[in-house]
Length: 198
Image (tube, rainbow, N blue to C red; front, top):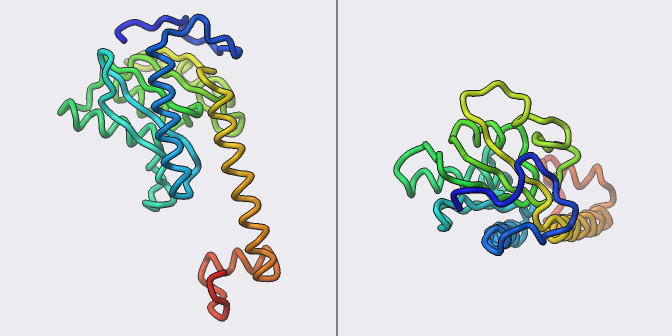
């Protein structure tokens, strides 16, 4: 889409009546990417970059898989879009992501010249757009990025909650089999070599 159909700097409160079907479909695609992250044991965050009605970059969280602190969904989607276009300048592109971006991803969006960020769920622990900071509103930059939050937030929140519930259950089972949380942490670090993989 070339123009946003929602006022910039807005958090939607569950009402999707003002959202175009296209915006919903792009966020649904980002949610599909988040599902791929969950399948490989990553925190389920997904992102897509859209230009002129076409998805040109996709990504999902791969931080643990790649052992790369920068392998966030947004960064990977921006990289894919830049490869597709053959330029790092994504001036007329929008980013759809299932969780409010952190400072790194918000800054990368500014650097890439993203036009607008749509995010699903707010991130009260690390969200740099409206939760713990207002980076895009406050930063004195050479490029302004519009934003809208809350697009399919319920679906994104459920995906995250289900993932962390299963992770806690798995960790409790490992703790029981190894005898304690401390043993699990040592096992993960490879310090307890006398124990087998549960």
